[in-house]
Picture 1 (cartoon, protein in one colour):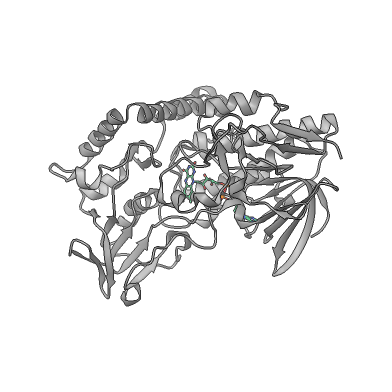
Picture 2: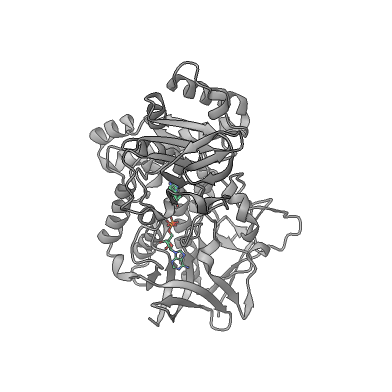
Length: 482
Ligand SMILES: Cc1cc2nc3c(=O)[nH]c(=O)nc-3n(C[C@H](O)[C@H](O)[C@H](O)COP(=O)(O)OP(=O)(O)OC[C@H]3O[C@@H](n4cnc5c(N)ncnc54)[C@H](O)[C@@H]3O)c2cc1C
């Protein structure tokens, strides 16, 4: 494929389809295309196929602002989310703008031509397309492989080892002993789902995670929908859930002790009398230092209560032919081991960025409003919130991009570059988050700054003000005509 488009979107996941919807609606006369490495729409929600895969935030905020979530379940399963994304693309005719099987490997900006030349691999061959503006929706992790620690003796193990990112669809675990290594959202999702058919499921964790139970269905949302119709009910529920999540997050940051005790009590109530809550469900970190895991309708506690699953908090010493030996000396028999050991973070789908012949070193750039890079012209990217649903930010990034492009088109500008020439702005990590997968790779990412517009906001309400209504020509953003 060759040619030129006004806006080139990379990635056809939740963010890419949302971005395409915003760009197409705002600029029907402009051209755009979407390059997608895989052969399908949906990104995360198409890739992850493990049993029970679901959202761990509510769909009234994980859904697009422009498309009401109308199903009864608020914590939705993966296939429903995938179908929501697909239908959004279908209804808006976005599919015909997507070039599947195009993995972008390089984007090179020429100031003289005021355009990007993007190189993608397609069927093993390089193809090029030029674009006036680049909109990256590549997610935040490596699609090729998840994180897999080096477990001693793994080659001796006689059973099956799987990673949730590449779940074998024919894996038969019925009646078998399954060990799930991990304690993050994936492990917490997998344990109750596997427990339905497995002989027994053991969640093996090095240390506990905060888990909060939440009703799978939002009764208020469903009632509002009946009373007010889909659109109005969705808008109200979205703000209700934003407010509730903000309240809980703020309480966690300001009064961590109170939140810790509330979460502990709620867990204790759902477990059998005398259960060792302190060992297995009392994390060493403060609430929201890492993302809080959700248990819809307390599903994980239910399977523990029923004896279908158990939690072991220990360290792996080695794999044995029949399972695992732990640091404490205990052993765990296993037919199947699931390494729910996380993702490998990857910035911008691993693509190389070049400006006028010089490589962009991402850690030397600073993120402007958490969505553009200092010194990098005509490029926006989507990275969602870590303390709230991803799409809340993704939608705002699109809204801001539309306003930015409109400003450029009206004024005849061909270039916009966020520029930080204030020496008092100090560097901060782009993701201020203590999860292992973040700490392993954050040094490869751009930085955030100590002050607006470089400071990374994690508040939706604040971002609504700055991204939806804030000044476009704010001094830090420099515009130029070719
Ligand atoms: C199992 C799981 C559950 C999650 N649950 C939640 C949740 O409940 N709430 C929440 O807020 N967040 C959740 N997340 C985070 C989640 O990834 C986001 O919510 C959202 O799906 C991200 O959408 P995206 O389109 O930005 O990225 P992705 O879904 O990762 O899609 C990126 C797309 O870009 C394509 N791409 C990447 N690199 C290139 C390249 N170089 N060239 C071309 N195409 C490329 C990929 O193939 C993919 O299709 C979850 C993540 C996982 C892994």
